[in-house]
Length: 291
Ligand code: SF4
Ligand code: SF4
Image (tube, rainbow, N blue to C red):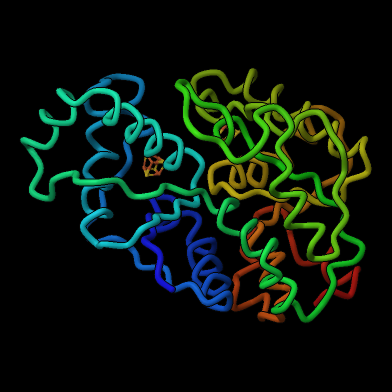
């Protein structure tokens, strides 16, 4: 089976390991990810704040290219890219004049629709079908995961079809439990980490992150799990600094969901680049004898 794939800029830059892991895990589940040709940045960070037309037109161009592949579904791992693309698709479906004006400028016109999925939506179907269990060679016993969804995966500025609960999503927990990992109940799974304020208001951003870290530790988590390269990077890169500032002793590795699935499938952690995280992600796996 083939699925269209939009990696977004992060998976081609700072989070290349996530791109590698997505392809490895999906391939083992029988899905060939076909990266769409000549894709452009979704514009989430700059266009969404400055230019509403461009904020719709940039993901629309990618949708046009994706639909032209003839594949029925596109999977988008980054929450920010996923959110912007789904919003663009919704706006185009409600506003034929906007769609016409964008199409007038595009070489690859937006025709028909393609199902836009985040990575968890696809993985959940593979838990339900038993395919993840079938491929699992080992149980991830001892992992106590704080599943972090971040602020964009389930919350939208307009009405879109969601497959999970807005305030208390469960998709990541379902995947983790299917691999034998424990998950903790905690209060900050959909809270914003303040990433976009990290340059102009570092104090506020660090305060938001300190709440996330403190609650995960207080609930007994020994790691974070993320499906978003931006959320993963923020928790990973700032944890030490925020921990020192706010008196938090513990440091929790921040795994991508694909790392857990890959480990259970028996993939080499070095091949998956698990050793590339900034908060060392290898010691816990060694301590729990998972590698
Ligand atoms: S999330 Fe940011 S970096 Fe990634 S494609 Fe969208 S705008 Fe570009
Ligand atoms: S990185 Fe932070 S601000 Fe960006 S989506 Fe994730 S939680 Fe929200």
